[in-house]
Length: 233
Image (cartoon, rainbow, N blue to C red; front, side):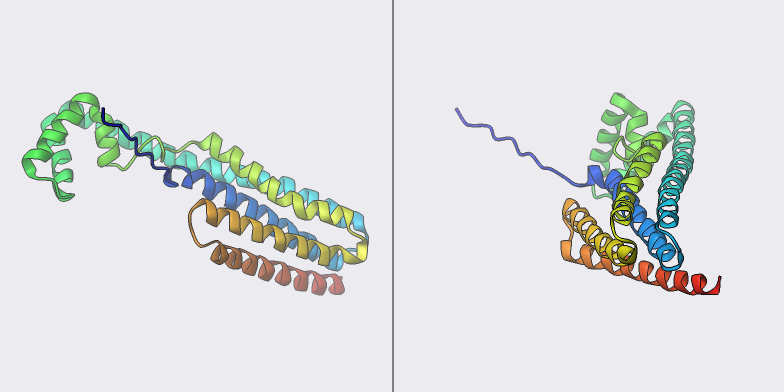
């Protein structure tokens, strides 16, 4: 007997959506909270002010990320539902036109016209709406909008990223808060950049440089502004 070998491929595209949200949330939480702590530490008179500012930044940022992501993804979900409802009506009222439309999509991708019509017939016989959603609208279970999941993941990832500079600010001596938070945050950003790039099969070092560079710029600008404002008041 001939052995049957199964070819198993593991693609990253199925996790691009949640990976993007998680990395973006953690990066945003780390950079924004660290920048705020560094800026406040440059002007604050007591360690308590720095900690209060950091905690407020974590809570406000996580809620903002959750609300923003929920509204954005909900709008996407509403659009998807409207498009699917339109397809249902067209499949009911204009089945032949919809069949030809699907066949022409396959023809435009290089399939022979007769074969394209046969494929369209077979796919529509199995699940016409799924075939049109996938090939005409570009919708699938992998890309479908999930507002609640997106909101929770964004809030959680923001809080996870923001926890690092906040913990360092609490533990570091008063005179070392700015330096300690900056160093720890840059290390955290480097790790985020590396992990995100590796998970997406991209160049890890490019991701590390890009994330840490902009994080350093954000913290430096905030520290300078905080120092000027603190001196002014």
